[in-house]
Length: 164
Image 1 (spheres, rainbow, N blue to C red):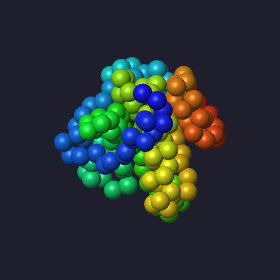
Image 2: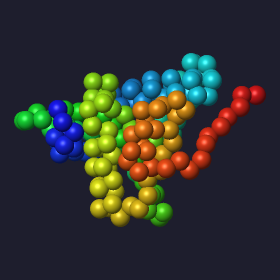
Image 3: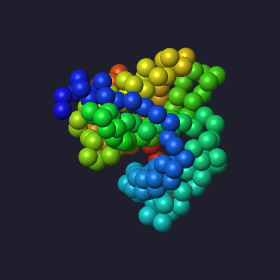
């Protein structure tokens, strides 16, 4: 599968009600692992924080205003494949979005889907009048850093923490 074909076959669509629980399940597991690794909390404390953050971010599930979860879709022949998620928060006043999560399923990685999805998101947001995308990359996530750098993102700071 060449990257030109991949880029042409990527679309983004809003997550549907029947898909939201799967997104939350994936996100809590993934975010728990990130909190354990990067913030050195115990697994139970990290899981509690991840659950709390999701509940606070999505009080109205997939219908929560300004919290946008998109499914990354790949069209191949007559079949549409769900290959990942993008979750962002829109700030219409500052005309910016903050990408909270960008995830490709394991089987969909290293095939050009990441860059194609970022370009699709950039086009979508530009058409909607947004002028800036922001995000945070976890320490040690070299694949994500490479993807974002290759798509024009630049480092604006470094997050740090200390356990007391």
